[in-house]
Length: 183
Image (cartoon, rainbow, N blue to C red):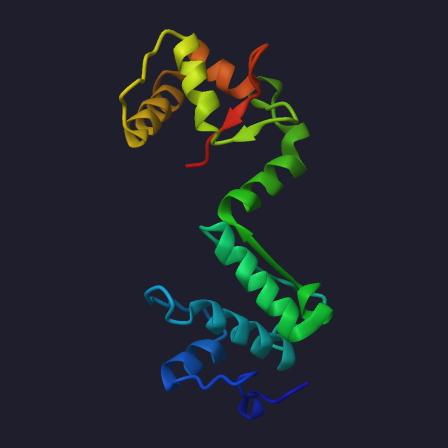
């Protein structure tokens, strides 16, 4: 274990004072920076700080959530490459969608039957969604994706209980797998 005041960034990294403060902050911290500014590196350094100073005591783990798949993969690979299996086994990096899917898959069987998707569901498969809309007499040719999403969300949230499209979306059809949307 390393004392907090004796911890230094790993690799050939020099953190400016505010970044070092963010790494050593054990409360919630908001980092706002543009592309390529080093947010992923900052997270990797923070992970090392928390583990090596024992601020995150084993067997506790860290979960990092990203909007994009490449960001989640990049962070996971960086941690594994730099810190090895010991840290990698205590660290999970996922997209929000992958995390939501993991929770749904884990608890799917306890959902009421009328809202339980089948095991082979798809996530935000817009080709299938458009096909299901068409099968329900809704022509979305020429619509922008944002308009289709808004229309689908409106059906689901406002009048979904008596709309066949919602059932087709959740349960699938003979020709299509169920499709789930995350909001």
